[in-house]
Image 1: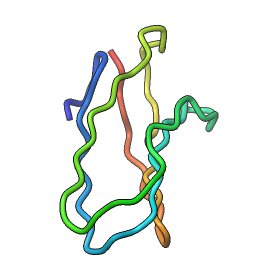
Image 2 (image 1 turned 120 degrees about the vertical axis):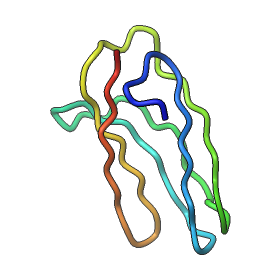
Image 3 (image 1 turned 45 degrees about the vertical axis):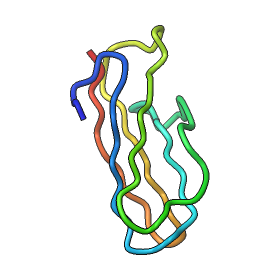
Length: 79
């Protein structure tokens, strides 16, 4: 949150167990724009604060949250 974003945003991920995870941002063409995080998620709520590069164009992006067994995608709109 918030979404749409202007520069920074907060992501909260709830995990029922400790897992390896990565959080990445892709453009609409599937090109990796930024890798935000690679590491361990702990059991419970994991909170991350991220900043988008100031030269990132406005538009629609997709955030991939991947753990040991699953991949999740979320749409991110940059104003």
